[in-house]
Length: 358
Image (cartoon, rainbow, N blue to C red; front, side):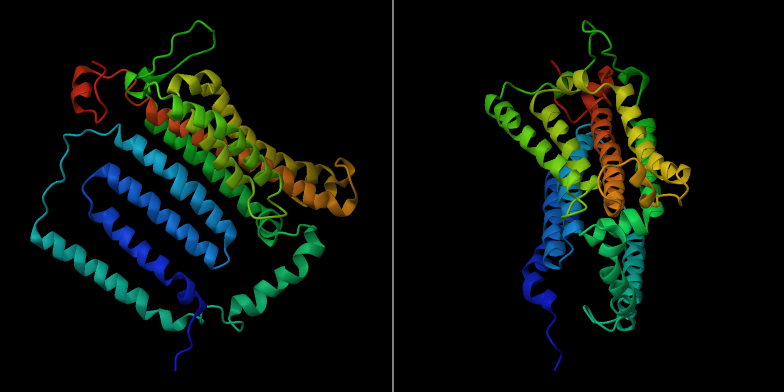
């Protein structure tokens, strides 16, 4: 008799919902509805990760997949032409796609017997790699949370380059979305902001007051997630996303001008780069003090506390750098999405999904 797997005992209803939401998101023809269903799909995935004990992954999925990504998709929908229709495909093309998907699925399923059983203590990962980190992580790094100790210490180079990838992706998105007509300057108090009228919200007192109440708590929680990420689930990435989401909430609740006055384009880009610079500077400081790159023990000479805590403090510094890069990347992407149609032509006004300013 096949033993029951713990994952099915708890996650079977969630798995059914995930499959249902995925099918609905792919089949629904209303783009806004598809975006909302996709957000629900991400939230179900978050619950599945949490049920499997991967709290860090669940945290990221909730913040990015179910939160900010849904906002970005909705912003993109509002800047997409409503006159475009999907091109009709012939039956041969549909059969070809179906055959490719079927063959790929069969190929992947055929490899399942070669994988170890879920949770098998004798699998290579559980028998060799995991015990080393479990037994040595706290003595080596003095960080109780194994995830950031692995990501920021044992694999510090990997995480640094991942932060660089976020920075490069942000630059690429800026380059694609940014138009000369969308440049906005608020260097002087009297400068006019060329903000599309489509993004001027109605006078919703409830929404605005609710956001005023929520944003301080979101930002306080985000700072806690960053500062306490090496002791509990969280870290720079998750905290940075929450901080960025709090500013995006202000833009959605009030108007884009409200955010642009506080987050100008040039300072945003400098702050995105500053987060990467902080991470890299911590490694360079270790080199200058005679240790290896990102060997945080060298920071004992300049950081307060006992020598054993130098590694923990070094990880906190790099988490702050990651949080800064992620936060301002999210805010900058949202601003550029909203400014796509800052100066619409008459043709744009007829094609945009947003209501006209008339």
